[in-house]
Amino acid sequence: MSQPMANSDLTASQADETPEAPSDLRRSLSLRDLVVYGLLFIGPTSTMGTFGVLDARSHGAIALAYLAATVAVAFTAWSYARMSQAVPRAGSVFAYATAGLGRRPGFIAGWMLGLDYLFMPALMTLILGIAAHKLFGGVPVWVFTACGILVMTLLNLAGVKTTAAVSFIILAVEIALLAVFVVAAIVALATHGPQRGWLSPLTGSGGFQLGGVIGAVSIGVLSFLGFDAIAGFAEEITGSTRQVARALMFCLTLAGALFVIQTYLGALLSPLTPDYLIAHPEDQGTAFYQMLDSQIGTWMGTAVTLVKTIGPVFSAMVAQAAVSRLMFGMARGGTLPKALAGVDQRTGTPRNAVLVSGLLTVIIAVAAAYSG
Image 1 (cartoon, helix red, strand yellow):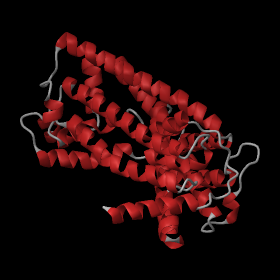
Image 2: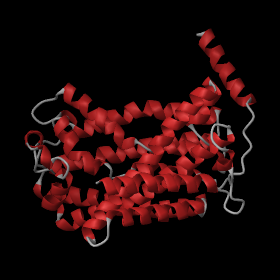
Image 3: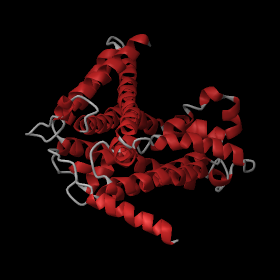
Image 4: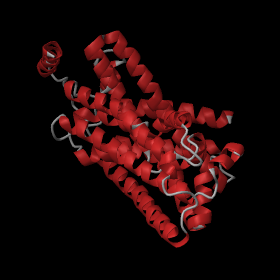
């Protein structure tokens, strides 16, 4: 036991002695802001789109699958929490890999994370463009997509306090919608009873199948993508470096709880059995919405659809903010052009990095819109 403790103490000592990188990023984010960023990127209602797929894969034990997924992702969250305290710099994974492994591994890690953060907002805004095009067929998909990217880029250029305020409002709407669903679901269960056994979302329908649950967990963990973006704002927090670690763990715990609650209630109310969904995969994508329409009312399905049409733009806004901080950190570290390390003195944001990330997102998203 003495040797591991010694190594741990040495690592902590080295981290304490490592000088913090100079930063002109404005420190104005609170613990609440970090949690809001993480939850908005994840999306509190993201499980609704994958509900049918996981319900079929887990053979009805979908709530258990999300509970296990939360535990699995907790190891990653804990790693981020530790590293964010040891290396409290913008760039998250890039900064961690550079400090621990060297410049070349850091560069590779930064690019891998950067591609993720670039493609995610492109995909999210493309989803908005497709949804809006269905409502206004005369306007091309790429126009709505480009407008969504323009809005989120302008918000990010306005500064983190502006984006934090907007993010809080959008997240509050999503949480309120989820609360309405929970209340309506409880009323429906009290009035008409469940469609399945009360414990079936945890034990499965027709018997527990471990292989199915493990397969569902491998998909369920994808619902948590984005919470790690919190680490990218380490140089903009107003408190100690522990704020990032606390935000990471709180965000993961709250998101996991919300996922388990909504999938548990959804499974109890779903008129489509796991066996039916396995036999009819074409209904898996709309299973949750069919449940809303038949068990609660079309008004609930319409409200959820509207929020999930607009929400991705603001999730993309957080992703763009995160990738701009990554670019800023890599540029300051000498692995990207120095111009990307420029900071707007009025807003305290990495202006050049935000503009470049917005431009790249437009190119990716519009190209995808045209190819589609």
